[in-house]
Amino acid sequence: MNSQRVLIINPNTSASTATAMQIACESIAIPGIEIKAVAIPESDQFRAEKVFSYIDLAYAAIETVKIAWSYREKVDGILLAGFSDVGLDPLRE
Image (cartoon, rainbow, N blue to C red; front, side, top):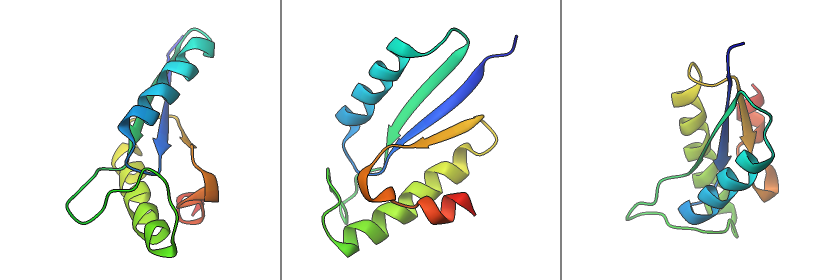
């Protein structure tokens, strides 16, 4: 049986939260499920461990979609793990 690969995107810049998500999901995943969790990259222009404003939401949505696009042929599914469904509509499209 081939393994299934799941990407968890934490749509903020908290790498520690992404790591905690990965550890928690790995602890309950059935055998054969590979899990990778990532946060959006922090930069000089943007750092937000929580999405509080429409500006945060817009920036985080773009970065979330960029991450999903870069993994589109490497994973079998994507979990968007954040409040406000950051980037959900473009990801569904």
